[in-house]
Image (cartoon, rainbow, N blue to C red; front, side, top):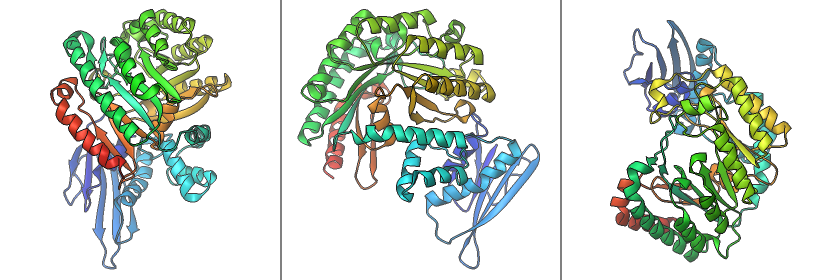
Length: 484
């Protein structure tokens, strides 16, 4: 399908909008004056009128049928407003031609709850913000209410963050093997084993650098999070020690999370390290309790392995455990997914996160599988929400990704008092997150643009090869931003 623009260059939002209806499809682009002949297209043209206004023309051609509409805009329009106007013109046309009504309407961003919060702050009313979600952005009543419920749960968590506080994220970009649905930059431990000693040295130096800066600028550490990859695929003793020395010892850290993740990497020994260094929250992630689904997804463990490792962690004293599940995995069924959620509830974890399969180009599944059946995934997600909330779990954070099954969302559910503060702060864009390690992102709140983002090299090879220059640049950039 062709994305056609004329008189403007706002292709990114148009592509994101089209992906709501044509996920995982490759598009071509045209800037010719005329719409493409004989092809399916999504078109938005902007032309000046004699009275100084602008004429916005939208058109969609699918399956041999074409629909179009126009709107007059002011002579001067900001890009963000133009994106909204283009989407608002094209969205009903796409709905009419495809018969689809995405649950999140024409919202394409990853943080709808954050957007609802901004609307509420702007209008002074959550009710008005919810009305805007429904009337302007075409979000369904169900998803609007879900966002509002999460917003209410998040408020006290956001308010409890110490003034000027930061969170620390350590990236461990290694996994024992790569799951077929995964698109994260992670590296097999067996293939990258020779890099791990040098990786330890570099993250030790970077932890020290970030530790000095937080102390120098008087930034209290609110939460610490070790993610990946699969952190427990390597020996975490030294990284835990370095993190505790620089960020945890002597500070009232609200949360210290480690993604223990894959059950095949969890041992009594590495769990004992987490206990020794005061980790307060871990994840044990089955993704499914169906063995056939796990095999198809490239997960080298069984459902019973996942349950056994959960019970081991519980026996060793961990009283805040999260479990992840994915709706829409190949070979799974609605009934199988229901059984997975029901089995998780019998284990009684403190939180359960329900993801929807997102087919990314970097994932093995991207080339080999079609998108999951939307109706089935929607039924899975609905069952999880109904069952978990009935069991006393509350939705507390939410984010969306590109190419998600049924254009839905990932939602974290938790028992009251067990919500992950890091997840809330990270998704809300209201706290500085200082990333450490290959693939980590740093997000500094403040500065001229409100939020400044710094990224490390994605791949361990590059991170190690350029480490000294990267750290010099990072220190310079952080000092400039933290001094604002």
